[in-house]
Length: 221
Image 1: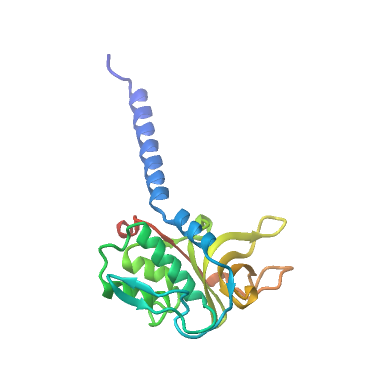
Image 2: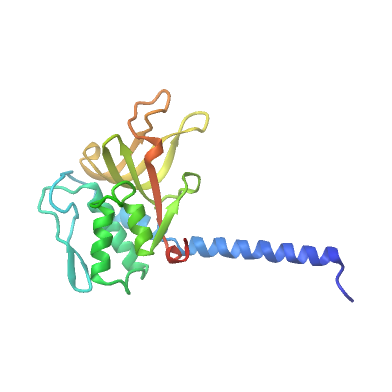
């Protein structure tokens, strides 16, 4: 017995839904967010904040070579600790096993925003260029995404935890993990947007950039 046109349409629809669902599951499984969150939960808090040296809490190596030496300062800074987490998450997720030392060193410089093209989005640009992540829209943000934001000329490299919202559900700020003076080093902190009514903040909502580490990074244009 042949299927009716209606039955064939239903079959096509169900097949399409199944394909979309499978793609979504694959994207979720490919993301390193759970690993990132596990790593930051295990890192000691505090330790001081100091804008000197490399900013990393321990020496980072790749292919037997030193990418960055442990900071010589009494404390860490934001790009250093987020880069430390990114490298460990990428290593454990087997994302950088085929990357050369030169590629990882370029990745580090981009993460720190040391050249003109990476200066604005930093960690997001670095993830995309190395092919181990992609940019994320604000509406799609998830805990464990990497984030670069700006307050005028001052920027901050952090790991996103949640949006802060007001009583009406409007986004008014960002709850994040990083290292900063407000927490005397590594810790969780909240900052508010400069246009959030009733809140004192300096974060420019138009300069908030999110990136997700994922095995699907190379497959995205």
